[in-house]
Structure formats: C-alpha cells, structure tokens
Image (cartoon, rainbow, N blue to C red):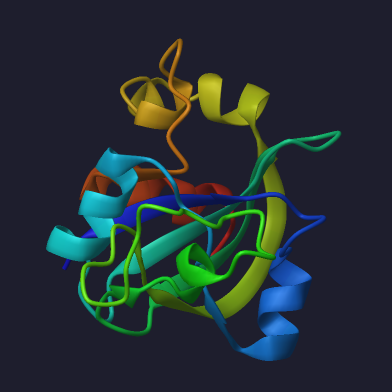
Length: 152
C-alpha cells in the first residue's frame, strides 16, 4: 500500500464536495510526473491526504483513498474544457486520472502545523519549489498526519 497527497482547489473540488459525491474523478492533472504517479504507481485502496491548495489557508482537509485504476481523462478531448489538449487523441491519450473516494473530513492541518513537526520535515509538499499536485507520502508521514488529525 502506498500513500499520496493530492491537491485540489476547494473552489473546484473541496473535501465537502468529495464527501457529498463520495467518489470524484481527479480531472485536469497536466503534469507528466503527477500523471505517471496515477498511471504507474497508484493502486485501488492507496491512502490519500486530501489537500486544499490555492486558497486562504492551504492544508490537509481530509482523508480519502484511490478508488480506481487509472484511465484516460476525458477532459483532454473536450474542446470546451480548460483542460483540453489538442495533441491528445482517444486512441493515444496523453493524460490519465484515477477516481478518489472521500473517507472523512479532518481538522485542517495547515502548512505551519506540518512544518512544525520534525517527523514531516522531508514531506515533498514542504520542499521549496514543489508545485506538484500529487506527491508520495511515506508510511511514517502518513501515521504522523493521522496522529495530528486525531484519527484512531
């Protein structure tokens, strides 16, 4: 089992939206490394830290799990979509996604809290210059986040 941090802008999909829908397609990833994580490494049941980004107070807002294997992101083929990619073809998709099942909302664990924990010093999301929307999380980091979120 692997663990991941997946960023979403709450104006697009928040943890509350994901909980209401139960399962959301992780649409619109347009970074090759993040795509490769979904395509090559994510497996059904992997743990997900649902992270709110590009908002007043970014941070981990909930827990989720990977709910599907990867499949082509349909937005790449839709000319009306902001995620349209004219180079993508249905027979040769460039962008993949996974479905994510929301499990629970947590108290927001903001960047200051994450940075204050020595056990989390190596988290990719805390590295300067990191802009990836999907990053791996170690098992030890996962356990520490559960402790911070008071999840038993």
